Amino acid sequence: MLSAVQITKSFAGQRVLGPLDVECTKGQTTILLGLSGCGKSTLLRLLMGLTWPDSGTISIDDTTLTRENVLAMRRKLGYVTQDGGLFPHLTALDNILLAARYFKEEAAARERLGPLLEMTKLQTDMLQRYPSELSGGQKQRVSMIRALVLDPGIVLLDEPMGALDPMIRADLQSDLKTIFTDLQKTVVLVTHDLAEAAFLGDHIVMMNSGHIVQKGSFTDLVRNPAAPFVSDFLAAQRPIHWPSADGELSDPRS
Image: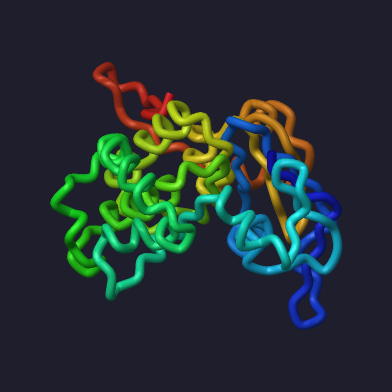
């Protein structure tokens, strides 16, 4: 449903990405995982058509993404940024309906609004507030509704929970997993958080210095690391252990 073939990208003559191939399976969540600066967000922007590769092709439903068709193809894509990307001068509702109005589908979007509010656990009275009047978690829920309100087949998320407090982040992760499963969306999510990747991802794409070092399930990464970098990345994100009733240490995520 979404693929990139032999993609490369340079900035100021410096190669920052590729060549690499990525295929995102329909109805599954693909995680782009790696350190900050490894090219994850650049790849996501290329998939969205916000910037263009120096070489290679990006395809959506077997149609190659071009400068001529990019606006029409974005109708098939939902996009969520790290800070929500809400316009400060618009209410939450106006932010949600912005793309729907552009594509002249406001009536259909309003029909989907109720179920999406329920799924994201956002109260109806939040819709008349401006972004400055919303918490970080509420902003991300508004941004998620905006990404879903046109019922796109593909949703792209660029570290959408990176700036949230741990408890809010955990709640939103659980809600997103339910939404992705219930709506059967093809999802691409950028993160550097190993626990988030394990919880949300069906397929992990581990990146380093603009290249893919391993693809597969989270279990594949843990049991069969393809490179020393993978082992080092896993080891660096040490689990937190809590004392149990008998004094033994246990991993709260297990």
